[in-house]
Length: 119
Figure 1 (cartoon, rainbow, N blue to C red):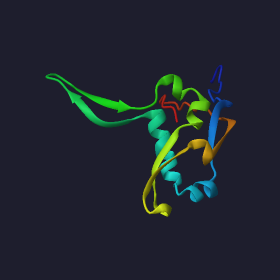
Figure 2: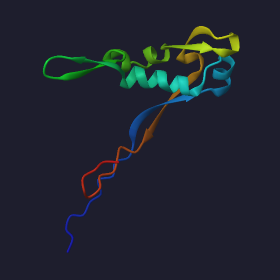
Figure 3: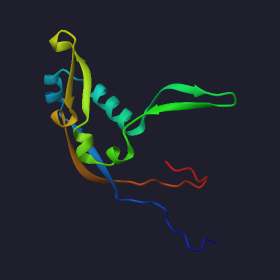
C-alpha cells in the first residue's frame, strides 16, 4: 500500500533567456559560440591555471564579481572581445546588447528520482 504519494516536480522556476540575433552577430563578425563562451566565462568562470603550495593545489578562477553577475544591465553591457575575420582579423569589442536581447521566462526546476539524483 502507498500512503501520502506526492510529486516533487517543480515547475515555474524563473530564468533569463539570452536570445542571440544571429543576423546582427554575423554583421558584426562574431559567432554564437564566441558569445556563449564569453557568457559562460563571465558567469561560471574559467580556470586558466592552478596555485600550488606544499600541501595542495587550488584552481585560479576568472569570472565577473558576484554583484556584476547578478545585474542584467551589467551583463548586457559585457564587452565581447573577438577577432573580426570580416575586417582582416582586427581585434574588436562590442557589448552583448549589440547582438542579443533578453527575455524573462519560466522553466522546470528539476525532478528528483528515487535514487535522489536531480536532473
